[in-house]
Amino acid sequence: MNKPVHPAPVAVTLSPEDAFDLQTRVERGEFSSLEEAVAAELAELNYRRAAEIMGGGDKLESFLDELEAETVNPEDCVDAETFFAEMLTDLKARAEAAGE
Image 1 (cartoon, rainbow, N blue to C red):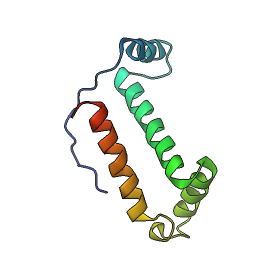
Image 2 (image 1 turned 180 degrees about the vertical axis):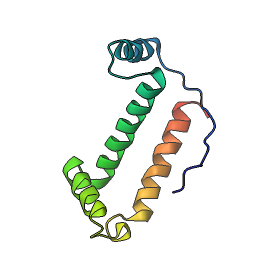
Image 3 (image 1 turned 180 degrees about the horizontal axis):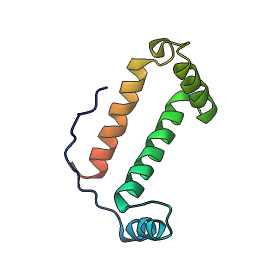
């Protein structure tokens, strides 16, 4: 999947509790900005989703190590049809929960 070279800014709405938590972490110096904090949380969410798809964090880490060493072809390890079916189901559930 290709990411846009110059992505457009996106507005994100957080609950007051989450916004307060992230701002507190910025003020403690854990992150340099609120944008960095949100990006880090999204990266963590993506990692957890990838680990779930791969069958656990250990399997994901092993897969990433093999990819880095270029000893594995990703197409041999991930069932794309199942992956995209699960992703579509998840997106539909999120849209339904959001009332879309």
